[in-house]
Image (cartoon, rainbow, N blue to C red; front, top):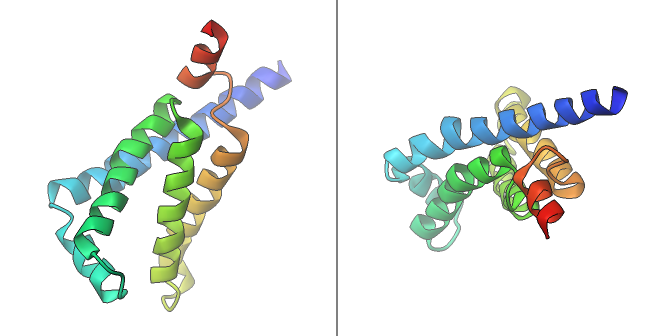
Length: 130
C-alpha cells in the first residue's frame, strides 16, 4: 500500500509538472511565435537567438507533454532540465522570487531524468510489452 501511494505521488508530480511546462509555458511561447523569448535569448548574447528560442519553446511544449504521458521521459526531462538551467542563468541577477519557479522546475526535471517516469507511464508499459 505504501509503495502504491509513492507511485501515485510520483505520477502526480510528473504529470503536473509536464502539463504545467507544456500548457503554461510552451504553448503561450509557441502561439506568440517565440518573439519575446527570441529577444530575451538575443539579450543574453547567445548566437542564433530565434533557433535557440524555438528549441526552448518546443522543449517546453512537446517535452512537457512527453513527460506528462510518460513516454521518452528521461530524454524529455533532460532537455527540460537544460532549458531551466538556461532560464536560471537568465535570472541570475534577479531577486530569488523571480528565479524560484525555474529552480523548482529544474529540480523536478533533474529528479525525473534520474528516476524515470515510474511504473504508471507509457515508458513502463512499453518496457513490459518488449
